[in-house]
Length: 225
Image (tube, rainbow, N blue to C red; front, side, top):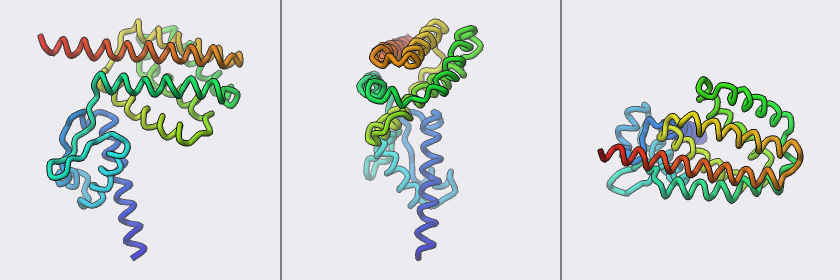
């Protein structure tokens, strides 16, 4: 009996990992209907672990389950983007102000060198810029000892990954601006000026939110033509 329970948990974790990865990388697109039977066949497992995985993903707001109708991948729209960046603007500058002294300076120095290398040739380093962006925010998050804040931001970062996939490539101008914003944040952190770093983080998040919304609106307008 104990062995069966262990196997059940393993299958559920496996289903959860595979489905979540496909949602985050855009293979399962926003608003796409997911069918338990089809997922079970696709993943090569019974419906029970798939159902348990979907329940967990609903808890993370990556899917919405409608009994007797099906499961839908959560949408990405202007409201979602605004809400996500609002949460980030509330929490990330707070972490810097409260726990800036805990941020690893060695990791910041590595991040700074990477940002400067990207700035030297943004057009050739688009993918690295996205990875460097995520890395900087993870460095800051790692300094936070409040697990409730961490759990909230990790969920938000998952959604942010979906936004990146959905919006695709950004203009070189915005990538360069973002890179400069990151460098400014890091410089302030390395100078132990946490108030300035928090302010620059807030400004960076505002700029990112504006750019994302502008992109989504432009794509929607283009689709109407």
